[in-house]
Image 1: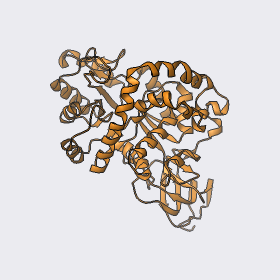
Image 2 (image 1 turned 120 degrees about the horizontal axis):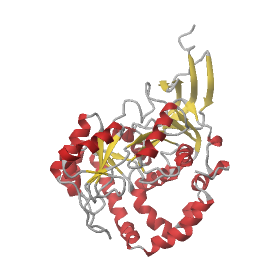
Image 3 (image 1 turned 180 degrees about the vertical axis):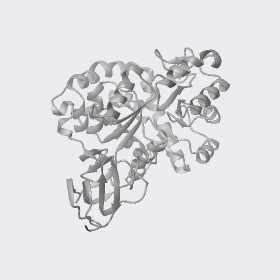
Image 4 (image 1 turned 90 degrees about the vertical axis):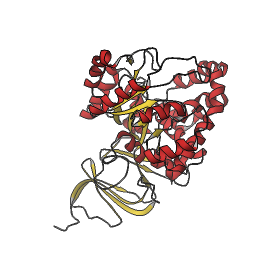
Length: 417
């Protein structure tokens, strides 16, 4: 048998590769997938003995599967299928009902459901009365409340989510947050159990505090004001991943001022007519009347600039939306590019950097030999125009081509969650 005559499941030939590392696109690439992993990525032509699927990549671009590192999943299977349809192959749910999100995670991992890879926090951890609402694990005294943390740890969250925000910004009232020594105890305890941590903060002071308490990642950008040079220097040195979540703030004024975005094909494909009609009418009227909408319209560009400066300084910016919609990932990419980050770099933020956030960069986030085979094939060049990331030809998760026509979404006639 010829050394090149090997048995494998999937062969993508003559594709232009954007591998997620930030390197320039490479034309004429062959990607060999064996099972759920990438066997090789090369410019040579393979001669397979047998293969289940061969894909002609001529005129196509391959990027790693997109990843959303801040989701609060609603809508069940329909929402999960909307992510896959949108080219999103991994999500991190940053706070949800444990009785909902952990069973979904288990079903995805066992293959019982078709879904993106699900990483989840379960309930968030916060101070009594802190940001996070009903269902949060509240901690006031570490020794006394440790059994609650043990119960949470027993559910094996992939990344702990802590909320640490006194509010008092925008139009919000002041609320309680964790003292710095208690925050450090909680972070250390989860890390001792092998669990990474992330934290909701919104200002530079709380970010500094969390980082020096040992936090692994930041769930949001600084939005309350411009970041300092000291902060950028520290983030460059420590390389703490910071999730972008621009879409949540942008979404308020965008709906009020430009509801026509809901007519874009990707939104129509994954959102029901009922949901869109509610957004255009009831929700739009409510948001137009809120001072919060105007505050977010002013401050979202500040967050964009903070992320651009952080990226330019060598920090680790990660794509996340704070929503539950595959199309929102593409809006997040647009906002990052509008803020001055190149399309090629934006793809890296949604792929390799997302894997860094999870601590899974050895398995996910780039198209390289040995990595899990999560890819998206596009009909146009996203490095030229980030809008081309919506022109999806095929989605591949764990080495299998997703049948987008069978996904339970409105585009395929399914409107129930």
